[in-house]
Length: 97
Image (cartoon, rainbow, N blue to C red; front, side, top):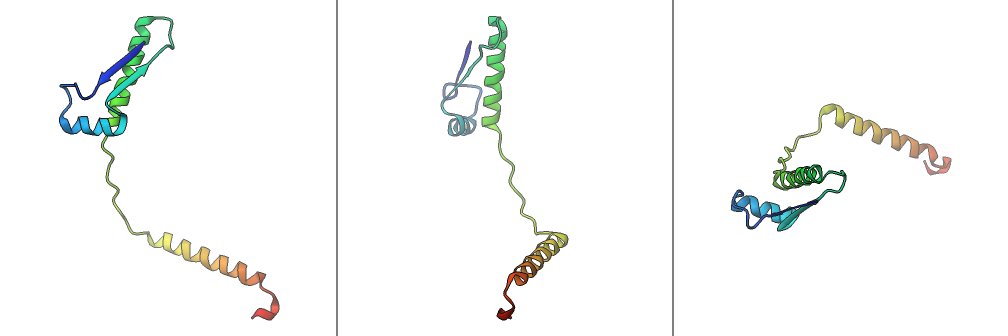
């Protein structure tokens, strides 16, 4: 069973929503289901998959709020740098110092 949704011909979506879906999923959404023996159940599964595709295409990603590193994170980074420096200093030959 195949479920098809023509985004551009839809009257239930606003123009903004149509643009978003076309950008992310294309002008026509298709979902196929051949999992079950029953045609009715396959139709239901295809529609569920189609709805999920439409929902994910319409989802608006949240903006990332930039934050500064915490004091503990800065200290961990500096401690790791000191440790790596000590390791490299230990690898030097005695005449290099």
